[in-house]
Length: 423
Image: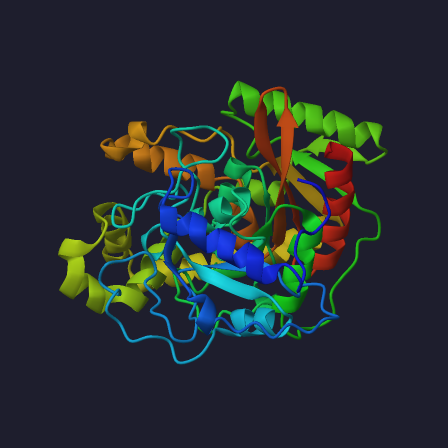
């Protein structure tokens, strides 16, 4: 996609009508993308003409409160909950910037997977490779952008849930520094790892959405000199040949454009391998949803329920030790790599076939861990990270740039340069 933005206050009504018409027809390419749409008559469309987001169509992951609508979080047990009384802060801020909310997008139940499969509301179709998973958990959000139903998608990222579906559908996904965007009014998966961020067709649109969504935080940081480091000790094994070839081609383009690209071991990533990452999501989601688990286990996705139930295997001391170990990792990372950008493929594989995962639990869990491996680094290390699409020969992969906490704008500046080089 180019860097031009297709929206304006002059065409918003026409574009919104076309989107809602496509969704209502439920064609194969847009099937299961939205769990609900917001009636045009109830959409707040007072756009400040001077705002660069005025008239942008925005899809909202079904984790966020939108005034007057039920937040289902991809579940059946929440579908009869009371409607939200007000917008979550990021949604409210996007409205104030002139964006128009289209609807709630489909997702993995409770955001607990990187694959995007939902047995309750269906699984959105991958837009690049027919018959494959869309990536998750912000599955519908990525597909809404890739199919042109929305300009921007708001989602969450706990271990790659913005960047994985972005990579699998050929768009840009950005996980900001956790502190920079409010999580109020957004249902929790992992209070330690959850971040709120945008997806869009290009870095410019992602930046506009992020600036509208973010809250006041301490001063953001810049790079003394932006250097890329490709880790030799993490994230580069077990790559599909198409991913390996595409990533090498992307590195060549960056080097030829004048970027410094270094391949070396990153010590903090060796230590990260020893951290039981599953403690965070399992324990913290159990803290949020234990009553629901007790009452509604029969209507939950069994794959999600079983992963939450693993919390029972973690004692309080072990969980606290994991929290402490993570804090040490964050300090080590910020001390060692503060002025470097870690460069990896977003996912080591191309989107896997949906049919191969539906009835094979072992393959499902193994594949889920595989696609989460690289992007989860940013969540554990409290970093910011962006996935850029790169097409090599017949395949599009995600190239992921990760930087230390509060380097968000600096990282997006570099990402925009890379996007231009890749194009």
